[in-house]
Image (tube, rainbow, N blue to C red; front, side, top):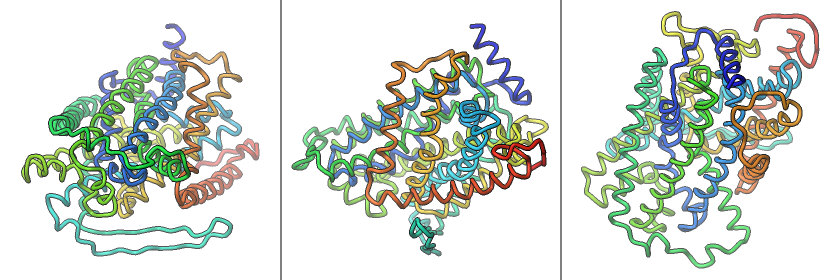
Length: 494
């Protein structure tokens, strides 16, 4: 344990103002409420429509295998480098702190400044969507506009803006989460456990309702040629995998606030693996039980209607009446709130870590003088998330997944393979099981999600534009500061 202890001490020195107050239970619950959120309650119709039948369960099953393979990457890197900021530190160490790693880690923070608020906004939009079941007037739209910008070589860049009463509610929910997070980390861990209990009670009730009314002939009513391996099948599987990956994401949340985790060399891998296994079981059982009550054809029709916003409320209303639908709505709004809370906590620590390292804007390194948390980073993440709440949920989900895969996930997985070869001396309290097979499966799986979908270029354009702008900013700053690739010994503050 000597090597892991020294790693722990080094990490503490890197972030002396942070408190290591999160244990295994707290880390796992924060991961799980981040993963569940509102995703599985709003995306089920989309997955069913993508594959055209209950064979869409393959998306949940293959998605679980894909994120477990990637989770082992996060587990090894997190245990080796348990510092707040997670992937920022991994990319920097892998590709060279003063060389390519500086560029890669900057691009990660740059994209996170957008993808993290996208993830937070998806939870707030889902929260408001379910609220429209109980309060239909929230669905009143007062502004809607589609913007199209032609970009040379890449084609049209489209942006869909939507403002309604529900949008205002989504923004207010984010503001409330920021208010709750504006305090000490040890208090937040206790609150997270309370949120986890509420999330689990919601899931248990939904599963119980489905199982007690389960009809196998509905759940396994596969259409003709459902498993025929043709282009339609593989494109549908790619689209369903993208949604499933979005619903599973969050298993790595602990890596972002690793500088505030107790015994990180043990806690980080265990919390990642435990949360993935538990959530995979929950998702698969929950979705099969629901399909055994509502014919999949109804879900396919729901995907293109407003009812997709609150499909579980309709499910509960059908089984137990209108009151049950309202109660289910409130519980799912609670889980969405818990997810946004967890996301804001984890993501707000990453720009802080990069700023301390001098590789991001200095304003992000400010720590609250009394409660010792990066309050500027928290406020900026929350503010950008409020702006993204004006986007459509489907666009938010697709853009989030594609941007993160292209800019971070693939570079991180390949980086682990490089690190194993170039830095065998790095302490590894946890090593990937069956190395390198999970890493290779993760690369193939994420590439499949990127390209094996209808109209896949739309979101890829978003990512390319974001990368280009990030590169311009980085090279201008690095030229002024004399850093890679200009290699001058000149330091000018950001």
